[in-house]
Image (cartoon, rainbow, N blue to C red; front, side):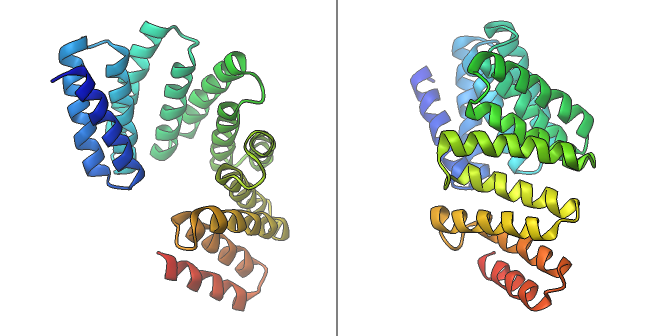
Length: 246
């Protein structure tokens, strides 16, 4: 029950999360939480980190209410111990925004992402990658709210920062291309949507390999766009490519 052991459990949890073994990740984060609560007290920042990690894992497992509960606990400690405008607080706001989006409460999601954006802009500057993440999250929420022009604006801001700071072939750039493709499809501009999804596919294939889930997502999106363009042969091919990946 040493604090160093808790740190190792936490790191193992993060690794298993990246490997997609969310049950194992949860097990390790539970162990880390148990030790840090006992050794450091219930309101320590490391306890908040365990709460946040558990929130992320429960989100991946589809238990969004539990995810919300853990992220709220993390936010409460971070606000108390680090101050209301700390970057870690912004991360908690962002995490809660994602959870509320998954719960279908898009107004609440927007509120949290706005908080995150405000802090990151102030503390990290207008062109920080975390600012781009907030723009991207807000774009997703506005898309769900049906405000497609605002969604496009936010996704374009996210893309601009990511290309500048991460390079033109980064996976986060591909995510922005994918998001912009989806927005243009909602706006009925299927040619533009196709262009963005093709860019996303090119990057994800190169950076993640031909059988990655994000590659499958791009195949699916391109299949849908080609269907809308009445190119049914191409649509069929992309959906078959997706099926071969997943």
